[in-house]
Image (cartoon, rainbow, N blue to C red; front, top):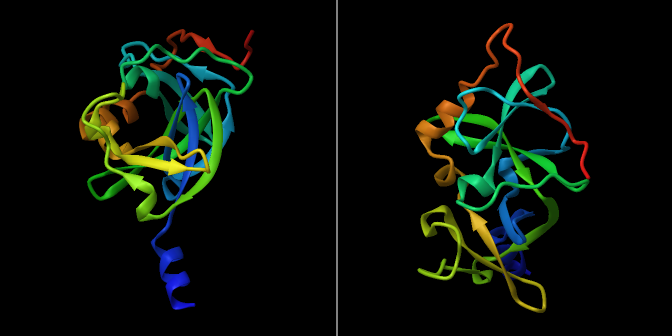
Amino acid sequence: MNDMSEENSAATQYLSFILAGEEYALGILRVKEIIEYDTVTRVPGAPAWVRGVFNLRGSVVPVVDLTVKLGLPPIQLTRRSCIVVVEVRQGNEDIVLGLLADAIGQVIELGPEDVAPPPAFGTQVHVEYLLGMGRVGTARKFILLLDIDKVLSGQEVLSATALRAPPGEDTERTTGKVA
């Protein structure tokens, strides 16, 4: 019985999501909530990987298009598009950001034996952005486990969280209305 509880305590839960046809995952403790894509306000001068900002219960939250940040084509909005609200560690502070995803996958639990080191080749994502490759299911397919603190490093997080639409300036709005 002790062996089983030790095995369970070593397992980590991840939330998987789809980006450009690939399945990625983040540690579930970093995920605060999942929101249906609605209105995102574009902010002039924002980095290309910042889709804009949205209102989360009175707070202005930047929305990051991870596909652009990872060097992939931008997400095309669909009915399944959503925003995964996460906390990114910046020094001693946790900063809230929204990550745009094509769709949500599932919550998966992986033990240390289920996580392989990232390969030095073969992925479209920089290896330093990965915690590893999670093996899931009986097919033993791989899910790319993202290290969100490295994907969105210090200065980038600061520039994204500093975004505010200038007062009185007309900003372009994108809505969840999709084809």
